[in-house]
Amino acid sequence: MNTPEYHLKHVLLTWCGLQPNEYDGDTVLADMWNGQTGRNDYDPVGIKKLLDWLKADYIFGACQTALQIQDQDLGANGTLTTVLKLYLHLQNCGKNAQFRPTGPSTLK
Image 1: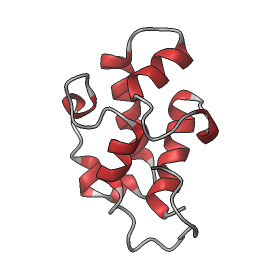
Image 2: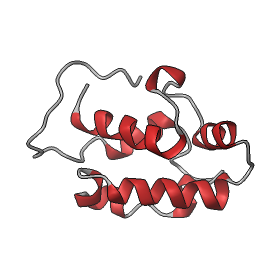
Image 3: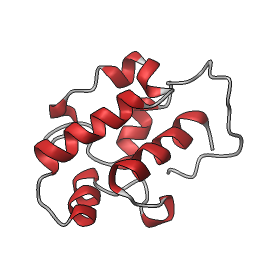
């Protein structure tokens, strides 16, 4: 597991409460939020909360790639609709981080 994956899994857990073994790379972010909250308000409420958690994270909060994600990128017609798409977008964040988890990525 690399630094961005570790931090993304933590962000997703705090955002919607799902453990990493409860989703995979193909899991749609909107389904994660709506399924866990019992509400159908991913757009705009879930998206705003996800962006807030990304910005609050030690690695993503210091990464321009993460900070430049817009609501529409995470929306139904956006380019970052699944866990894997979001991970791939963020994979260069934290290259110079002090804490570096080791091992292969489990997001495929």
